[in-house]
Amino acid sequence: MTENKGSLNGSILRAYDIRGLVGDTLGPEDAFAIGRAFVTIASHRLGRNPRFSVAYDGRVSSPALESELVRGMLCSGADVVRVGLGPTPMLYFSITALDRDGGIMVTGSHNPPNFNGFKLALGGMPFWDEDIQYLGRVIADGTYAEGNGGLTECRVENEYVARVCQEYRSSSGLSVAWDPGNGAAGSILRKLVTCLPGKHIVLNGEIDGTFPSHHPDPTVAENLEELIAAVHEHSCDLGIAFDGDGDRIGVVDDKGEIIWGDRLLTLYALDLLRETPGVPIIADVKTSLVFFEQVAAHGGNPVMWRTGHSPIKSKMSELNAPLAGEMSGHIFFADRYYGYDDAIYAAVRLLDLLVRSKQTLSELSSKLPRTYNTPELRFPCDDDMKFKVVEMVSRRLQNVTGVEVSLIDGVRVTTSDGWWLLRASNTQPVIVARCEARCEDRLDRLKVAVREEMRRCGIEVPNF
Ligand SMILES: [Zn+2]
Image (cartoon, rainbow, N blue to C red; front, side):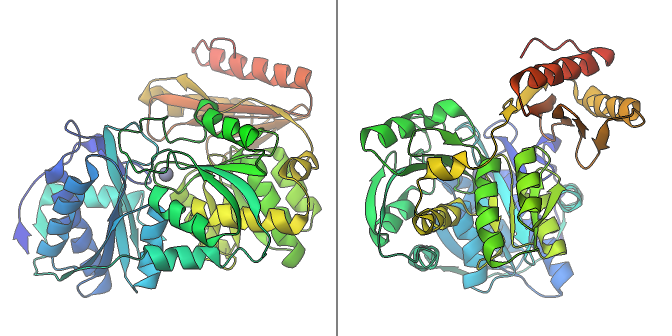
């Protein structure tokens, strides 16, 4: 053991991962300390030197952070395989393919270019919440495992592409526009499309951490405009976008309409239930009522769970669920796959689903009931107040008749009009809200209810 007391900026230790502003709250010395601490914790848990893989996304700051991270891991005795530049799901894939105990992905995901961070996995599970706080304490304490680890390099791109391609089981192809947004999925995607039948147009396929074209976040409609234009221009069957590290998907149908993550999850779920009825399928608290009703109506067991890739993965393994997803476009397949959120894999499953259905994506989507909803709304609210708001609202509504209150994550309130959600953000001084109803005037009533609840807590929310 060596002692080397240090400390991280506490703000970078988040609930599901580590993320900070490069050169401000996050630097190479932090990457080194995180490498040492993660290996120290893993060595204790495993009772031996751990075997890890490490990958990094296309951000400008990623190679330097990766290099110090790996150096830290080696100093604490890990056996490290460097899998290099690629999307987060490729890192997850390498853990299985190279028989690793876990791994670290250097990624700022969909955040602005000057952010970066780390996603950690250990023993087939995400490393999060208490684990991440503990990692911070190990760094503050500075007592690290000592060792002389081994380092190898191994690209898994070709194996990964081959594995993902297996899911496309038809010989006829579709016409697809793709937009990885200059993110880390770009080079894999360009290989993938050469293995799939059909016509493929790849926009912004060059990996470029300055994100010159648009921000790589497909949950924001304006980031899909270029993709929608390409779908129209080339008369594509669909358009598919990825976030900066390829673990979230955005989809546009043949008419250029966006299919948000929760409706997309519903399409996967109904397809899956035809082959495996009765299984649990998990969706996060922001998910449309359409998912819950449709899954139940088709003989499945819909389960609502906390937002975030880490809690969703944990719940999936607890329930042995074959599929889970989030409004934000994280889709997790354990059915025929490994249970992690892989947008590239989800994309190929969607193509396979679509070609088998012999319908257009807009036809498939139009068979799901139409509802009226808001996007994810974000109301500024002080960090110490945001949890109090949720608590006050839930306490007030718990015994009101005709109102069903769920406290799985924030407060989700179901009334005869529909539902609304207030949830304290894990990462920002923000309350996240969403409303959904079966018709427009009912949606208006829900919006009024949300503003009224916020007002009771002393927070004025502008009209939305
Ligand atoms: Zn991501």
